[in-house]
Image (cartoon, rainbow, N blue to C red; front, top):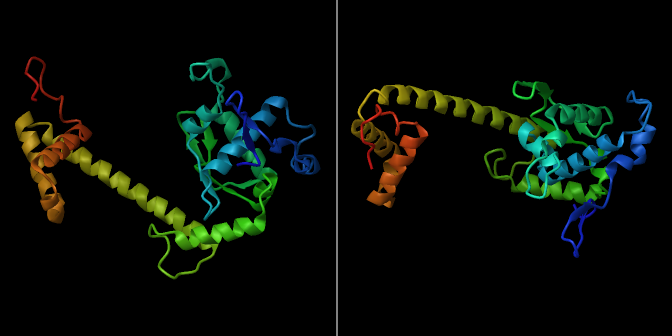
Length: 258
């Protein structure tokens, strides 16, 4: 990041030190990638900032960058003095998507299977993989980068690696994908369970709702009950009620509980 950005001590503004869009690579591979001209200034500026964001968010163990369409577009959009996005200059997700496909043609990133984003109306990858070419664009030392990558792999402790296990980056990425799919399945099951629970409880008066939630929560805590105070347990019950949207379901005119 020090190669890419610098901070003006007099104004406090963070500015680009290295513009990767001017790299000779984009000149040499231009025709092979189906381009006849250099990048327009707007696309070059967007490429420079997108590259910085990817380097800032990359996982050094797998070189994977997870992408959020709205957050990424908002981060790349110009803002006014109040910090709000200027509507007429907002960077759309389709522009970012086209730029990512172009970077893939130049060998800067690898794209997995894309998904259709209904909100933005375009195909967008949920994550990308930075190649060695991408790191060289930023001036990274590949020997130091591989050493740092191995340290991150060895230090991974969230269930992807077993103690003392040595795997390749390809295997680690595969396990990362499997972990993400497993988390998605768990999230969907949790939402389905909460939906059934909400449908059952919303028919009851509020006091009975609260009691039922307290009973279910008490059973789920099991061994950790003794570490809680009554006040902490009550707070957890209210959090569960708000999460299930069971607080404001009483008919109009009935006083709300406190």
